[in-house]
Image (cartoon, rainbow, N blue to C red; front, side):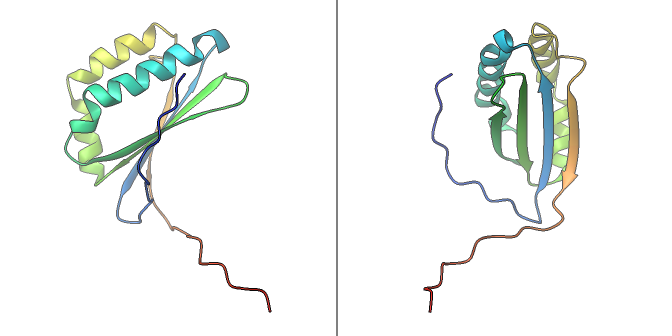
Length: 121
């Protein structure tokens, strides 16, 4: 899968985070990632409150993690009720993950950011 460079995404305490994890057979790994990114670019990115999505993959190509940020839990819940979700779920079923993925909402508890490096004495 071709990687794209994204703008910087900062985790902020006032944002809502949803993390979805998918277990997939290695031969389905790239097609699943392609589908998830294509659907995100096609319609998810335009939904109210959507901030960003990051797509993570493990070295064995057996797991895909989608990390999304939203302005609020209400925005994420509205996204979950969107009629396009049925289309996305149908596509995910082709990979055997439509009903079994683990998707969990999270509130950001704390963010620890780097500090500028200080010169050694």
